[in-house]
Image (cartoon, rainbow, N blue to C red; front, top):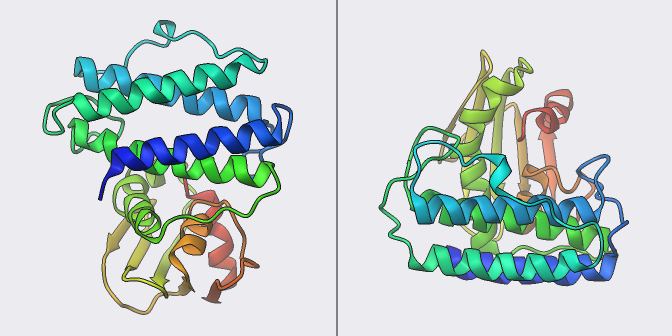
Length: 241
């Protein structure tokens, strides 16, 4: 799949929704955030990624290299410019070349191509929800975003969260291929790509499942079923980065 094309497409859609919502609109999934902070956060993540894939450092770039996003509507134009620069950097880089990332695994530029496609898709959904729209994620992008969350992100984030969540989750896409079993034990998360019974089963279209998995929509989402241990299911929100 073309991660870079998705970075451009999702980023453009994020910007459109952010303009429609306005800078002061709240971001429901991130308490205390508004659209202004969302645009600034996503823009900084893109700027950092540009540095990482162009320079290939072995450690994260210092924060003082980045100028704070403006708090007025000029932030939208800056975001557009940053998005263009990041897309160019991702296209021009060697995906196999070494660079730092926070997980300590897959230390290549290819990691950042995938990470940015899913990062921007999540925040595009935030902006659309702020604008009163119903976000829909392309099924292929949604499956990849769920897979990255379960296989790459949770093994890194679960020990940091330290919630003590214990049990298993079976996530199942109903409109395309995609099934996973994630087991939490001793603050660690292990995922296998398989059909298996979990303490909680979450089933639905890939888009709805992606948005649920990333804590962007709740159990009332159309087409989504959450079966099994409801108390355990509620603990999901505390473990996702």
